[in-house]
Length: 446
Image 1 (cartoon, rainbow, N blue to C red):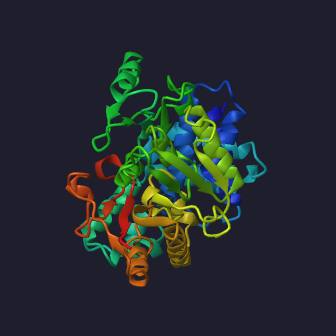
Image 2: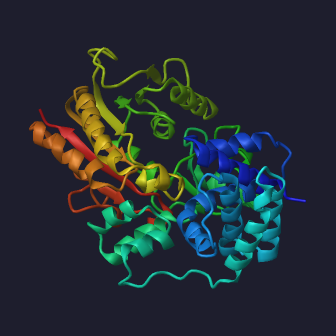
Image 3: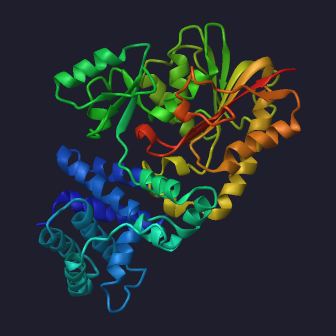
């Protein structure tokens, strides 16, 4: 009998291959239909589905080498079953016979049952091959793209600005299994007390090295099942993202605009500081609803705080004649810095999207900058690794606005290892177990 985890993972992968839905949403929806599934089975379903997407190109390379005739790309269920089995053998150390049996059974019980014999032969052949080995220092970029499972265009793009060791480090960092990281809600709890409670219940947790409110949970427990979830003691947020809000130095009396606010992690950080007036803007109604639900769980949404507006922050009629002394712009981006958490980004991102996003980011920065008072501070942040979306957006903005300056982030605010010579925050994926991130601090001088 096939285990539920493998069945759920297989059908989630087929749905992901078929359309544009996010893998996380597909998995969460599937798991909601199995409320009594054991936690171990839930974790295995997630591990298989995400792992297959993470290593998709390498799995396909190994499988194709064991096929006399290539399998049609349209046979999504068969491909997904083959990838799932080989992923378990190569990365989960599941015995080959067990992974093969489960996957072939799934094919037998589908409308592709005629392909069961083919799948059995391919998997037997693939499981007998020596495991893939990392490419050598002089290997062509296509070999790196295959082994580390990235689209060739993205590897070639990064290779233009990185040395070979830096490139390999970035590819490896993006393939890490990221720990669940939480931001402690300092309005209700502190890190030491929360860690003590979890450790008493044998939940492995570590303090984040760069933020006094960050906790890393290396075993990736089921987030809503963590003690304190319903009480609003914490929110899921990578430590790199947690470093952005402190760059504003929010204090009592500040009027802060969070310009692209959903899902609300940074809004929550601002609201946990007493006396800060926070206005949040989110363009999409569904994402605004998500933000408000998150703030409600964290007990950070009260009458008149924050002020919430659904709409495009670039439209002047939204919040007319309202200004702020501090603004946070966490701009929509390519998200290449968070591939380790969302590996589907590798396969969904298109080369032309980066230039399109950069144009939109400059437009957003220009629009929100008009709302900042003289002497005020603006922090621009992305989870992108691309210079076009980061340094080049900042430079293009400064070239057009002579009354703005970079306000460099200093080593007393962030570790020097996270700073560029220009005073920007720049974090590589996997660096100190964080996601890739960028932030620049600007000041309006007149």
